[in-house]
Image (cartoon, rainbow, N blue to C red; front, side):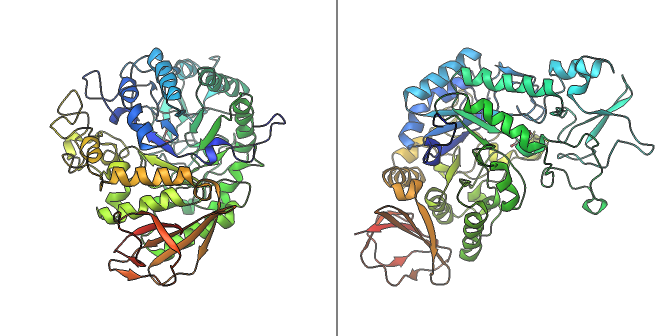
Length: 512
Ligand code: GLC
C-alpha cells in the first residue's frame, strides 16, 4: 500500500513463496503426539534455510477439533493442544527475526457450535446473538431449504430447544455466521485487528466466497441434486463484505495481505473476488490440484489463468494442501514427475503456495480404517512430517496422531539435507534461482511453441530472461534450438544442458 491506499507496483507478496504449515502435523514438542507452536518455532531455521518467504499456519485457535481447528470456539486464543498466546507472540517474533512473514488462517464463514456466540444464539429465540447465525423455521417436509452440507447430510440441524433449524454448510458443529448482521461484521473485524495488532502479516481466509448470503436462503436448482454449496455459491453480497475486510487489513502499515479460498471452478468467476484491487489481494487457484499430467492440459491451464485474471489480479499456484491428496501421490508416486511439478510451481507467474513436506517429496500416508479421524477423509495428506531418520523421526513419541508417510526413513529432513540430489535440494535450488531472478519472481510469461509432450514458456522482466521446459513424456526427448542457453536448475540432476530432456524432466534455462 502507498499513502493513497493503492497497491504499490510490487508488494512483497507478489514476489514471495508461501509455505503452509498444518500445525497438528508439523512437529510436536509436548509429547502428546500432536504438533504445536513450539515445534514450529524450533524449525524456523529449517524454513529460512529452505528459502521460503512466508508461512501460513492453519488454525491453532481454541477449538473442539470437530474439523481439526476449522471449528473455532475462540478466535483470540490458542488451543492448549498447540500452546499459548505467548507462544503465538514468540512465533511471530521469531519468524520476523529470520525475515519470514506470518499469515494466520481466519475462518469467517462459521464458528464452532461451542463458540460463546453460538451458545448464546441457540439459548433462546430472543437471545442477543440469535441473529448472528441463520435460524429458520422448517418447511412441512423438513429443513428450510434444499442445501446439502460438505461432509454429508443436510446443511441444517434442528434444535429442540427453540424448535428451529440452524444453517451449517459444513459439519453441524460448524454453524454459519450471519454476515448480514453488522454486529457480526464488527466482531469479526475485531478479530482481524487482534491478530494484526500482534504483528501478523496477513490472513489466509477460509472459504471466503461463502460469507455473503441472500437472507431468503433460496433453494438451489433441483438439477444440482445433493451438490454442496462450496463449488457453486457465488452471491454478490460477498463483495462488499470483502471490501470491508480489505479496508481493515489495508489500514495497517506494511503491506498486510489476504489470500482467500474461493472454491469456484471457473477462473473468470474467481477473478471477481479480487474486485478493483479492493477485495482479496489474492485468491487461490485450485485448478492445478486436479489438472491432468500432460503438456496440453498444463498449457491450457496457464493460458486460462493469464487470459481470465488479466493485469489486475495476481495469480497463485498450488500443488498440495491439507484438503487434497498430495501431488506426488496424485502423480502415481513418481518422484520424477513430482520434481518436474516443483519446477512448474516455482517458475510460473504468480505466488506459489507450498505445503509442508512437499519439499521432502512426501506422499500421502496409507491410513488404516481404524486410524482415520477426519470427517472429510483427508487424513493421508495430513501425516506427520518426519524430521530425522530414526524411529520417531524427531517427534517425542513414536506414534503421532496419524501414521507416518511412506519411506519416512529416506524422505525426512535430516537425510535429505545430507543428500545433494534430494528433493529438498531441488526445492532449495529453485527457491534460490527464483529469488535471484526478477523474471521468475515478478516477470511476465509467454507460453511458446514446443514439440509434442513438452511445455515451454519464457519469463521476462526487463533484461532478465528465463526459459522453462517441462517434459511430460516417459521417454527422453530432444529439444531443438536451445543453443545459447545454459541450465540454472534441472529437476533430474545437475548435469549441464545438452538439449535433451530426460523422462518427466523440467529445466530452467538462462541465456548463456
Ligand atoms: C476449508 C478448509 C478445510 C475446512 C473447511 C471448513 O475448505 O481448507 O480444511 O474443512 O474450509 O472450514
